Length: 198
Image 1: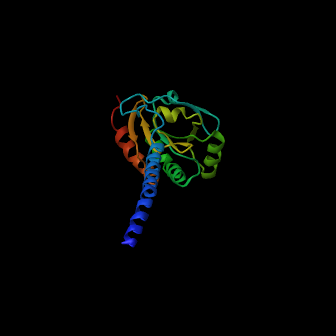
Image 2: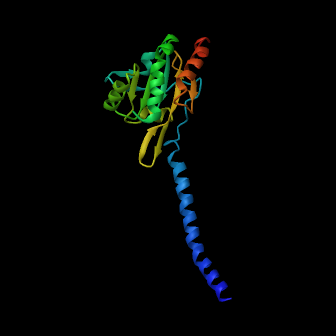
Image 3: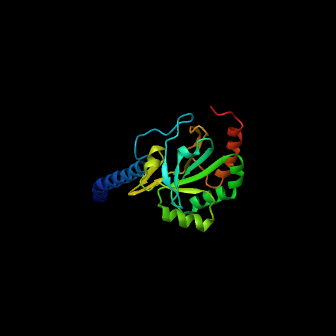
């Protein structure tokens, strides 16, 4: 009987501690999910809508503006960080397939929150033949609704938009495989460029 009382007393003391641990765990899970949500409520540009304008410097300090690419197809791909494993794989696959993409009449541009200096080093290290746009103020990431946060760190989520010669969104890839994406883009560009643009 004494042993049973001791066990019950111990369980009674453990219950609040267990509840506290469960509450803390729940908070961490919810916080992690919240931190990976978009940082603002603007809608993602939909297919058929006008693509948000941009005016950014590339790795060569050359100003790149969306309006300067009217009349051409544009593959605008957002990625989290220069010289990280997934981003390097994606960039190098675009590099390897660059001339196939250009043969379809499309220009490739990468965008991240990194600055011009970081883009320059990344581009030179892997001999990237396309522009990397420095969105250090996060304005373009916000306008395309790809800006994310993990704790205090902001980044562009890995998403791509194909923009048609009239400056409209022709295709959106909300989820991207870094390894397969360039091949996927070529496949879809063949279909899109075979259709008359509206």
